[in-house]
Every structure is written in structure tokens, then in C-alpha cells.
Amino acid sequence: MSQEQILAYRRPDGSVGVRNLVAVIPTCGCALHAAERIAAQVEGAALLHYAGGCGETEGDTALASQLLSQYGRHPNVIGSIVVSLGCETLDAHDLAGRIAQGHAPSELLVIQELGGTVKTVTRGLALARQMRSQAEHLEREPCPVSSLTVGLECGGSDGTSGLAANPAMGAFSDLMVAQGARVILPETSELLGAEHVMTERAASPEIAAQLLRTIEECERFLKATGEDFMGKQPSPGNMRGGITTVEEKALGDVLKGGHTPFVEVLAYGQAPSRAGLSFMDTPGNDLASVTGLVAAGCQIVTFTTGRGTPWAMPSRRWSR
Amino acid sequence: MVNTLVIDPRDMVGVALVELEDGSMVTFADMNGQRVHALEPIPFGHKIALVPIAEGQHIIKYGASIGVAARDIQPGEHVHTHNLKSVRGARQ
Image 1: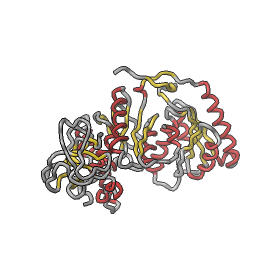
Image 2 (image 1 turned 60 degrees about the vertical axis):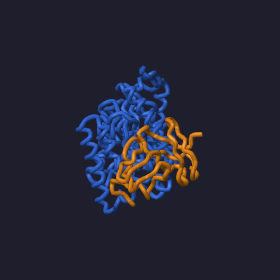
Image 3 (image 1 turned 120 degrees about the vertical axis):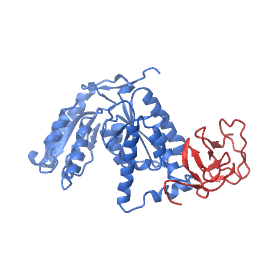
Image 4 (image 1 turned 90 degrees about the vertical axis):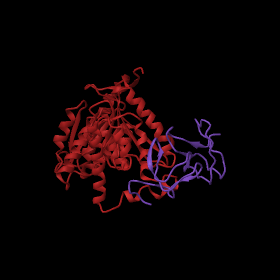
């Protein structure tokens, strides 16, 4: 197959973006309002809706900081505005510094140092507009499809999802893999019941073992909640639609990943290290799942739906 | 007119693309002369057996097992919770 090209923006670090977004990143719930007001008033600005930053476990704060820095360095981003209150646990200076090591600049606004919300928003608006105007001269140029990382997501499934939309996405996945792109299938809980197919498709025995471990860990976690997750699969609506067993439901979902082997198992938000189809360990919740896909560098996330999925989070604009 | 979808050539069941009436002829791509009539009404999106399936046999859809036949199934029968059981310990 010939090497196909897409029109996209080449970044100084060699990565390729399909959007020119300014990321507005609050480092705690207290800074969220100011960040929202900045993002809402600038075309091309995207709010990273984050409300943690204090009163969490160290592990949660570290993971959030890591993911936010990956967003700031995302190829679809041309600059970041980090909005901090000034007394939160999450280290805003460290976060802004790590973002600035990527291909795009970052600016840190500390509400307590600037003298309040109004002054912070005014300063943030000026910075965001400046970043956007500097991006106006950027032109799309032909870039190989192999420079893309693509996420595969579905939500609000109906009886036709496993018959039409997901097989179509699977065919797309196969085409992207043939072009040397990185493709990521997420959502561990959706795979419970498809272990027999997942392990057959693993590129090596090690990857098969890793897939099984990831699925088993997910099932252990679900059991630890005291609820019988597997006993409730498929849902009554699934059954009315004609789906009989959890295996059948899971296979309809795995179809999204097409027919190529799994070459890597990724932790949540981890970027793939090689071309081909990877699996990412994420929750089954679409918003949480897509957040992990975009953090891993997906410039595009494809999304199939049967009943409609009208959510509007920034990553939709990031990655649509 | 095609009224049934067979997703993988290895599949033992098809999926009704319309409500199949009792006695109606099942038509799908690549039938290779296979003749199956619905033995009962099959709702849209539900499965119909295309081959004889013995009790205990794995039922193949999407080219893989979706569970085990709970009893013998004739071509043309509705395949659902009454004659197909999960092997993953699901509801039923």
C-alpha cells in the first residue's frame, strides 16, 4: 500500500498536530472558575476541566499532574496557560516547567500573586489571544499518516453498533495500522468475556499474558466493590436488542480494533512506543477513557455511537 | 432482498436485519446455496441458527465463541437466552 498523507501542522519537536489549541489548565478546583472564564472567551482555547489538586492522595495528585503535563505537550496544542491559586498541593511551577520542555510555550498565572480572579482572567485572556494570533501564520502541510496516533472509542451503543459501526471502525483501524500509525483500543471492563479472542490476537505470549493480567485485575477490582458486575452483563436493554451473553457483547466491542495483532499493553495515559494496535487499560466510562487516549498523544479519537453521546468536554475539540 | 447479516464466514448464526416472520426464507450475502427458513418469528437484531447446533457445542458469531448451546438447535430457530448460555458466569 502506498504511503498516504494528511494535511497537518508540523511542530518543532517533529510531532504533528491537527488542531491549534490553547490549553487552559487549572491546577486545582479553586482555580477552575478563572480558567473557565479565560477559555470561554477565546476562540480556539480549550479548558482542561480539573477540580482536584488538594485534599487527594499523593498518587492521585501525581497522576493528574502527569496527565495535565502530557496535555500541555500534546501536538494539537500551541501553548498552555496554567492557572494556579497559589496554595494548592499540586506543584503548579513544576507543571508549567514540564510543559515548557515540550514543543509549545506555557505561562503560569498565580491568582494570589496577581491580586485576584479579575486580574488573572484579564491577563489570561491577553495571553491566550496572543498565542492564538501567533498561530495564525501556521500552515498545514502534507504529513505521513504514520505520524498519527488514533484512539478508538464507542458509547451509547445500540443493537446496530456491533453490526455496522464497530466493524466499520475496525476496517479503519486496519487501514491506519497498514499505514504505520499507532492505534489504541481502550476500556478494560468492556473486554470481560472476550479474553479468548484478545489473547489469540496478541503479538507475543508476553503480550497475551499482560492482556490477561490487565483484564483479571479489572475483574478483581470490580468484585472488590461488592457488586456482581459480570452477573449484570449484558444489560436488560442489550438483551432486548438481541445480545445474549457477555462474550457476544465484548466481541462486538473488540471489533472496533479490527484484525491486526496487539503489539503493546499501555497503562492509563501512556503513549505507545511502537506502530500498530495497542490496548490501553482505562475505565469503561467514555469521558475517562478518552481523557487517557488524548493524554497518550492521540491527535484524533474516532467515536461511534448508536443512541447518541452528546458530551462536550474539551478533548472533543482537541481530538475530534 | 437480503434480510439477515452474517458477520464472519465461520458464524453459525445470522442476525435478522428486519423482523423475520415464521416460515420466511433467510437471505444473506455469500449463501452458497444454503436454504434456511425461520421456524419462529425472529425480532430485528436477534440471532437465527443457520446450521444444526448440538447441545454443549460452542456457538460461533464474530468468528468466535459467544457461549454454549443449552440444547440441540435446528437451523431456523431463534438463538437467545433460552438456548445459549454464557461460559463466563453471566446472568441467566
